[in-house]
Image 1 (spheres, rainbow, N blue to C red):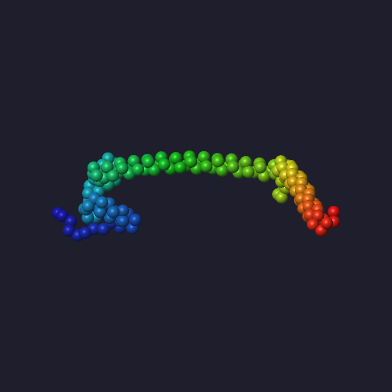
Image 2 (cartoon, rainbow, N blue to C red; image 1 turned 90 degrees about the vertical axis):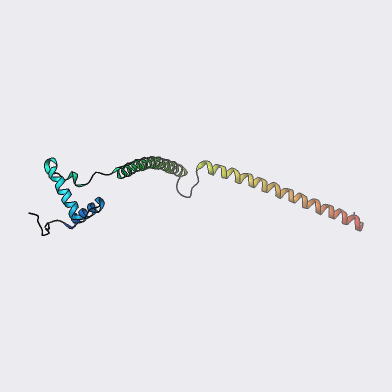
Length: 161
């Protein structure tokens, strides 16, 4: 005799109910039909497992799954390449920081110049002083020549000479 009244299963968590609804929608069945099919398949499996509860994917789903696996493998390869590039960049930055630290250490305390730079600055200052002295000497000589020429011209002009 067929059972006419509906039945319910108590003690099923809301998460499990939602999972059953999703699986039924994916299978294209009402929840009751999906549950009946799943229970029948589970009863025929060795050990009564639920492995057959999820229907085997059709060829479209299998192709989609394979495509997703390929894409995941590609992304994993790209991620690994990015990790390697990041490692190289970190090594480069560490090398630059080490070079900077050694140049700062050789420069002495803050505000002091490295000995090589200080020697160059002193030599440059001496050269500038020598050029400045020569320029002053030339300006004095030019002024004297102008004054002498002017004085000689005036003496000749006024007849005093």
